[in-house]
Length: 247
Image 1 (cartoon, helix red, strand yellow):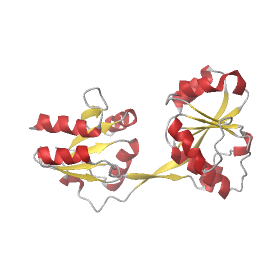
Image 2: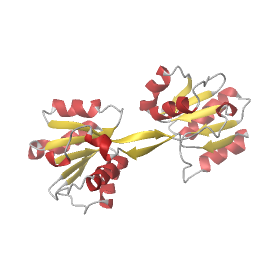
Image 3: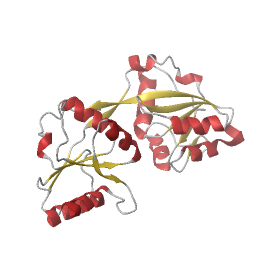
């Protein structure tokens, strides 16, 4: 790779050791820059869905951003969430984040192992009569979660609570990078909003995560590697593989 600059579309991680090792080994420059940020829907945007939080007895969360948005909108719309509300989260980390907003009580907070099926398994006959609100992001698909709920015969409604907002990236020269790492479909959206005439040319793209693959393909972007895979479980390892191939 003749161009030694690498752009990673996230905030710099706390542990930079793997990236510093790449700099030393290959003489590359690595920059971190978020292409988008997550924001809660405005109360006006939420009202457009014609939903009322109080019509539901249980909420399904898959992200911390959705939790913040749920309670932010509740406050903005002057809705008092009852203490009887039950919360079903995809992971323990998401469930623990609820402590920012409510008193954590095991009798009303449940968490799975990261899959929709693990969430549904928590519901069982004891909670089958609840009315579930499945929270998601604007423009994203909740099909895997709704399919699991449909299979279990559960009553639910899907509600978008958060949205991705492209960051202003026009201060950078996107063509000055030899490699770019994307994680999210919103990275692709931001790329073309900031650089409508963008052409890939010799830029090497690395995609990380399942959700980004389809978006990059639809945009006509070729990827040098799609991670994670057994041989490249991390972004740093994926970058190293591509750099070794180039050398």
